[in-house]
Length: 116
Image 1 (spheres, rainbow, N blue to C red):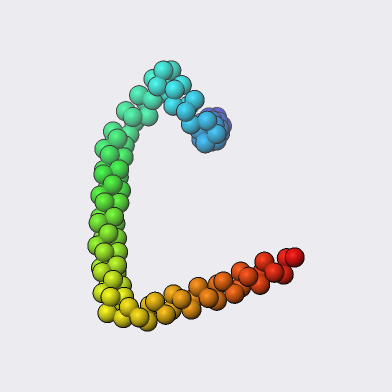
Image 2: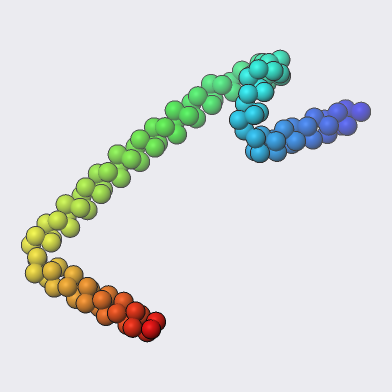
């Protein structure tokens, strides 16, 4: 009997999870308006749940901020190095750009002529 009740509860939770994936907004509205006892039961049974979720959210936010700050610093360093290199060897970069433009123009011209 206990095993059957546990299986029924597990099946009901799986069904709820599947429905939540499909209709998040509707489920959010239903959970906020109705079934407050179920929501309260879940929160009461897991007193550290809300605290754990808050800590996880703060940790994820701080990780994202640190990643952004590190990425910005790296990109600025790389861009500064490229800028100094281009200004120091400007003619090489202009010749390379002109050569790449000629090759690209040649291939695009061949494609256009070949389609006629």
